[in-house]
Length: 272
Image 1 (spheres, rainbow, N blue to C red):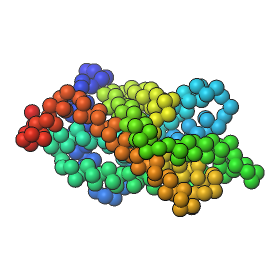
Image 2 (cartoon, rainbow, N blue to C red):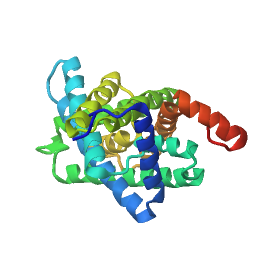
Image 3 (cartoon, helix red, strand yellow):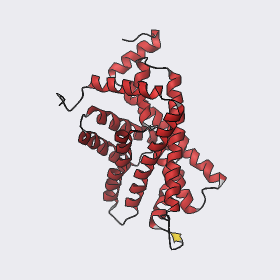
Image 4 (cartoon, one colour):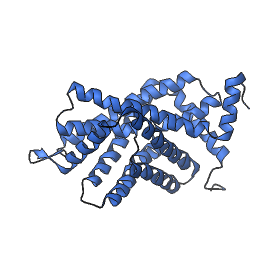
């Protein structure tokens, strides 16, 4: 039985560094497969959240319930094991500690982003094939909800999408950090729910969730294979992805200890 069910800040940092080192050492095949799994998990959570929104409920209650059920995606990533792009921004902790190189992070992020996209698309087409987007030849309530969500995201301009991406991943990465601080499974689950629910209620932008919502809405509308709509999809994913990177890195760099080490790292390459 551990002495404490909660890790200290130093222990959390050491855990993050160790996890980052393991991630940096994974080969391309492992990274891609684990990333596909994460895309599937987040896609399933997003689909469940969209289902909540398709019910006739009070708007506030619907957002709260959708946030809680969407949390399932990150819970599965953390407990079942997978590679999630947004959470992997926390690898910055290991970079500052000089446990691996910048190229390792770039390699991880690129492969994981692509794998998350593939996993999310898989869920979209599984739902489409299962008939959930249509009802008796017309678009179902779930399909209408997905179209509405997708349209609103596609209407976002670059900078609002970017800033919402920052806000989103501050909460997502804090959810990961707080989850790591708990030794118990129950604590890890509870730690995830509130930050993720907060980002859903607030309407922030998560790149991997959008990898599900955007194609799902376009497919329900029947315009997924339209080149212009595909381009519009990436006009959202690009600023949101960049914002998610900034938001996640902020969590590491603004920590006083990390900031001090970063200054030394940039100045003379020495760790404090």
